[in-house]
Length: 176
Image (cartoon, rainbow, N blue to C red; front, side, top):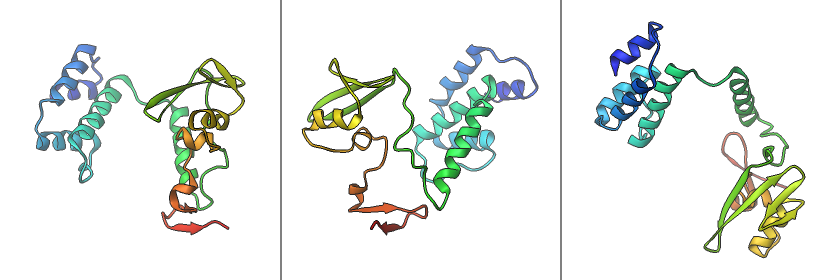
Protein backbone atom coordinates (compact mmCIF):
# COMPACT_ATOMS: atom_id res chain seq x y z
CA UNK A 1 0.00 0.00 0.00
CA UNK A 2 2.86 2.38 0.77
CA UNK A 3 4.53 1.63 -2.57
CA UNK A 4 1.33 2.51 -4.47
CA UNK A 5 0.99 5.81 -2.64
CA UNK A 6 4.64 6.63 -3.35
CA UNK A 7 4.22 5.74 -7.04
CA UNK A 8 1.20 8.03 -7.30
CA UNK A 9 2.97 10.93 -5.60
CA UNK A 10 5.91 10.57 -8.00
CA UNK A 11 3.57 10.94 -10.97
CA UNK A 12 3.55 7.29 -12.06
CA UNK A 13 0.21 6.06 -13.42
CA UNK A 14 -1.90 3.99 -11.06
CA UNK A 15 -3.68 0.92 -12.43
CA UNK A 16 -7.31 0.23 -11.47
CA UNK A 17 -6.25 -3.16 -10.12
CA UNK A 18 -3.75 -1.41 -7.84
CA UNK A 19 -6.54 0.78 -6.45
CA UNK A 20 -8.75 -2.26 -5.97
CA UNK A 21 -5.93 -4.07 -4.16
CA UNK A 22 -5.40 -1.09 -1.84
CA UNK A 23 -9.12 -0.88 -1.09
CA UNK A 24 -9.33 -4.62 -0.41
CA UNK A 25 -6.30 -4.43 1.87
CA UNK A 26 -8.05 -1.81 4.03
CA UNK A 27 -10.56 -4.41 5.17
CA UNK A 28 -7.75 -6.53 6.65
CA UNK A 29 -6.10 -3.75 8.67
CA UNK A 30 -6.25 -3.62 12.45
CA UNK A 31 -7.63 -0.45 14.08
CA UNK A 32 -4.15 0.93 14.87
CA UNK A 33 -3.07 0.32 11.26
CA UNK A 34 -6.18 2.16 10.05
CA UNK A 35 -5.34 5.12 12.28
CA UNK A 36 -1.81 5.17 10.82
CA UNK A 37 -3.23 5.05 7.30
CA UNK A 38 -5.55 7.95 8.21
CA UNK A 39 -2.58 10.00 9.42
CA UNK A 40 -0.69 9.21 6.23
CA UNK A 41 -3.57 10.34 3.97
CA UNK A 42 -5.02 13.24 5.99
CA UNK A 43 -1.82 14.37 7.77
CA UNK A 44 -3.70 14.67 11.09
CA UNK A 45 -4.85 12.09 13.63
CA UNK A 46 -8.34 10.66 13.03
CA UNK A 47 -11.20 12.15 15.06
CA UNK A 48 -11.89 10.38 18.34
CA UNK A 49 -14.69 7.85 18.31
CA UNK A 50 -14.68 7.41 14.54
CA UNK A 51 -15.90 3.90 13.80
CA UNK A 52 -13.81 1.35 11.91
CA UNK A 53 -16.28 1.52 9.03
CA UNK A 54 -15.95 5.30 8.74
CA UNK A 55 -12.14 5.10 8.93
CA UNK A 56 -12.15 2.61 6.07
CA UNK A 57 -14.56 4.68 3.98
CA UNK A 58 -12.62 7.92 4.47
CA UNK A 59 -9.27 6.30 3.68
CA UNK A 60 -10.76 4.57 0.64
CA UNK A 61 -12.01 7.93 -0.59
CA UNK A 62 -8.54 9.45 -0.21
CA UNK A 63 -6.93 6.54 -2.08
CA UNK A 64 -9.35 7.02 -4.96
CA UNK A 65 -9.01 10.79 -4.84
CA UNK A 66 -5.21 10.57 -5.08
CA UNK A 67 -5.39 8.10 -7.98
CA UNK A 68 -8.35 9.44 -9.94
CA UNK A 69 -8.65 13.07 -8.91
CA UNK A 70 -10.92 14.83 -6.46
CA UNK A 71 -14.06 16.88 -6.74
CA UNK A 72 -14.34 19.44 -9.53
CA UNK A 73 -13.62 23.08 -8.73
CA UNK A 74 -17.29 23.98 -9.25
CA UNK A 75 -18.40 21.28 -6.78
CA UNK A 76 -15.84 22.48 -4.22
CA UNK A 77 -17.08 26.07 -4.65
CA UNK A 78 -20.69 24.93 -4.17
CA UNK A 79 -19.80 22.98 -1.02
CA UNK A 80 -17.87 25.96 0.36
CA UNK A 81 -20.83 28.24 -0.32
CA UNK A 82 -23.22 25.83 1.39
CA UNK A 83 -20.92 25.49 4.41
CA UNK A 84 -20.69 29.28 4.76
CA UNK A 85 -24.46 29.57 4.49
CA UNK A 86 -24.97 27.05 7.27
CA UNK A 87 -22.38 28.77 9.46
CA UNK A 88 -23.77 32.26 8.87
CA UNK A 89 -25.55 33.93 11.81
CA UNK A 90 -28.56 34.51 9.56
CA UNK A 91 -28.88 30.77 9.07
CA UNK A 92 -29.43 28.72 5.95
CA UNK A 93 -30.91 30.20 2.82
CA UNK A 94 -34.62 30.68 2.55
CA UNK A 95 -34.83 28.06 -0.16
CA UNK A 96 -37.51 25.65 1.15
CA UNK A 97 -35.60 22.57 0.06
CA UNK A 98 -32.75 21.77 -2.25
CA UNK A 99 -33.52 22.00 -5.94
CA UNK A 100 -34.54 18.56 -7.09
CA UNK A 101 -33.63 17.44 -10.56
CA UNK A 102 -36.23 15.65 -12.67
CA UNK A 103 -35.72 11.91 -12.41
CA UNK A 104 -34.72 12.02 -8.73
CA UNK A 105 -36.52 9.44 -6.60
CA UNK A 106 -37.53 10.27 -3.04
CA UNK A 107 -38.07 7.27 -0.80
CA UNK A 108 -39.88 7.27 2.54
CA UNK A 109 -41.07 4.44 4.73
CA UNK A 110 -44.44 5.09 6.32
CA UNK A 111 -46.83 2.68 7.98
CA UNK A 112 -44.59 -0.30 7.20
CA UNK A 113 -44.62 0.46 3.47
CA UNK A 114 -41.87 2.00 1.36
CA UNK A 115 -43.17 4.89 -0.75
CA UNK A 116 -41.27 6.16 -3.80
CA UNK A 117 -41.93 9.54 -5.40
CA UNK A 118 -40.47 10.55 -8.76
CA UNK A 119 -39.49 14.19 -9.29
CA UNK A 120 -40.84 15.56 -12.58
CA UNK A 121 -40.16 18.82 -14.41
CA UNK A 122 -43.47 20.23 -13.22
CA UNK A 123 -44.26 18.33 -10.03
CA UNK A 124 -44.13 14.84 -8.59
CA UNK A 125 -45.41 11.39 -9.47
CA UNK A 126 -46.61 8.90 -6.88
CA UNK A 127 -48.37 5.62 -7.75
CA UNK A 128 -48.96 6.81 -11.32
CA UNK A 129 -50.63 10.08 -10.22
CA UNK A 130 -49.14 13.54 -10.74
CA UNK A 131 -49.06 16.03 -7.87
CA UNK A 132 -48.11 19.71 -7.90
CA UNK A 133 -46.31 19.57 -4.55
CA UNK A 134 -44.61 17.24 -2.12
CA UNK A 135 -47.04 18.40 0.54
CA UNK A 136 -49.92 16.88 -1.43
CA UNK A 137 -48.00 13.62 -1.79
CA UNK A 138 -47.25 13.58 1.95
CA UNK A 139 -50.94 14.10 2.67
CA UNK A 140 -51.90 11.16 0.42
CA UNK A 141 -49.34 8.89 2.11
CA UNK A 142 -49.94 9.91 5.72
CA UNK A 143 -53.59 10.92 5.58
CA UNK A 144 -52.67 14.19 7.31
CA UNK A 145 -51.69 17.64 6.15
CA UNK A 146 -47.95 17.99 6.74
CA UNK A 147 -44.94 19.63 5.14
CA UNK A 148 -43.90 17.52 2.16
CA UNK A 149 -40.25 18.61 2.24
CA UNK A 150 -40.03 17.83 5.98
CA UNK A 151 -41.88 14.52 5.50
CA UNK A 152 -39.31 13.43 2.90
CA UNK A 153 -36.37 14.69 4.98
CA UNK A 154 -35.49 17.66 2.78
CA UNK A 155 -35.70 20.14 5.66
CA UNK A 156 -35.91 20.03 9.41
CA UNK A 157 -39.36 20.10 10.91
CA UNK A 158 -39.58 22.80 13.61
CA UNK A 159 -42.13 20.70 15.48
CA UNK A 160 -39.36 18.20 16.19
CA UNK A 161 -37.81 20.78 18.52
CA UNK A 162 -40.99 21.69 20.41
CA UNK A 163 -41.64 24.87 18.42
CA UNK A 164 -37.99 25.87 18.59
CA UNK A 165 -35.49 26.25 15.84
CA UNK A 166 -31.73 25.91 16.16
CA UNK A 167 -29.48 28.88 15.70
CA UNK A 168 -26.01 28.53 14.22
CA UNK A 169 -24.55 28.07 17.70
CA UNK A 170 -26.81 25.09 18.32
CA UNK A 171 -28.74 26.92 21.05
CA UNK A 172 -32.53 26.82 20.87
CA UNK A 173 -34.32 30.10 20.20
CA UNK A 174 -38.04 30.73 20.48
CA UNK A 175 -39.88 31.54 17.26
CA UNK A 176 -42.51 34.19 17.70
